[in-house]
Image 1 (cartoon, one colour):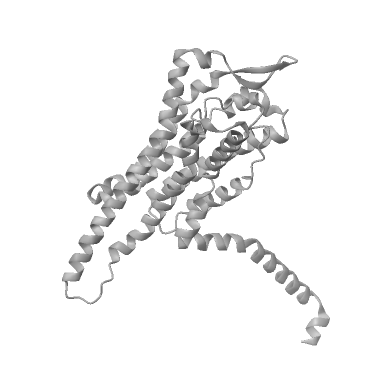
Image 2 (spheres, rainbow, N blue to C red):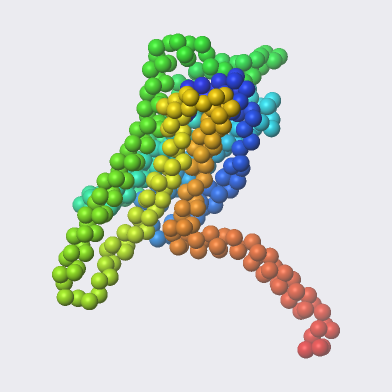
Amino acid sequence: MGHCRITSLAESDKGKGIQNDKNPLRNESEINGVAIVILSHGNIGLSTGTTRYLVAMAMADLLVINTEVIFNRINSYYFPISLLRITPVCSVIHVRATLDCSVWFTVAFTFDRFVAICWLKLKSKYCTKRTAAVILATTGILLCLKNIPIYFRFKPKFIVYNVPFYCSNKPSYFTDPRWIGFRKFEKILTPLIPFGLILLLNALTVNHILVTSRVRKTLRSQSKTENHHDPEMESRKKSIALLFSISGSFILLWLLYILYFFNVESGLDDDDFYTFENIAYMLRNLSCCTNTFIYVTTQSKFREYLKNAVKYPFASIIKLINKDKNGKQLKDPELWSKR
C-alpha cells in the first residue's frame, strides 16, 4: 500500500529504516493465526456478521505481518540478498494492499457496530452475515485494484547476470503530475479518511449511548419496580467494549504515524527523526497484533477457547502416556498377579 510515506522505498536509499530495523514483532503471525482459528469456529457469543468482520480483520493483519514485517523488514535485515529482493517480487511486496484492507476492514467493523448500537431499525437489514460478506469482498477488490499502479512505480536498483535486484522509485514518480496526484489520493484514502471516520463514528456512538442511558435511567427510576437491572444495556456492554477497544487501539497506535504524515518532525535533527520515523512504523505494524489481546480481555468465550487450545497439546500428551502405561499393565502378567 502506498499510503506509507512516499519515500518508503527511499528508506533503503537513505540507508535507514528497512536495513537497520530489528523489528520486535516476530510472533504476530502465530497470534493472528490463533485468532483466525478461534473466530472461524463461530461460537464466541458474537453475531455471525460481527464474526466475519473480525475474521477478515485478523486475516488482513496476518497478511500485513507477512509482507510488512517478515518479507520487508526482517528479510531485508537478515537476508539482504534473496529471491524476495528480485525486482518483480520486491514490487509485489511493496504494493501493500493488505495494509489498506486491514485499515478499511476496521472502518467497516466500526460502522457495523455503529449501526447495531445507534440505528436499531436498520440493524436487522444491515448487520447480517450476507451484508458483511458483500462489504468485505467489495472493499477488498476495490483496494486491490487501487494498488495495481504501485507495482509499476519501481525500477531495478542493480542488474546482476541479467537479473534485476531491489526496488527503486522511478524518477517520474516524483515529477509526473499523474503520480503526484496518485500519491495525494493515497494519503487521503489511507489513513486520513479512515482515521477521521473512526473518530466520528465513535463520537456519535458515545453520544447516543449517553443520551440513551439517561433516558432509560429516568424511565426506570419512575417505575415502581425495585429491580433496576437493565438486560438490554447489559447485552450491549460486550459489543460496546469490543468496539471501543478495537477503535481506540487503532487510533492510539496510528496517531504517531498520522503526525509523521503531516511532517511534524520537521524540527528534529537526523537522529531524532530516525527514531521518530521507526517508532511510527513500529506502532503502525503493532496495530496488527493487538486485536487478539482485545478479544481475550473483552470476550469470555474467546478466552475459554484460547485456554482449551493451550491445554490441548499437554492434555493429549498426558492421555497418550496414561494409555501407554495401561497397555503395559495389561500385557504384564506379574502386574495382574499382584492385583
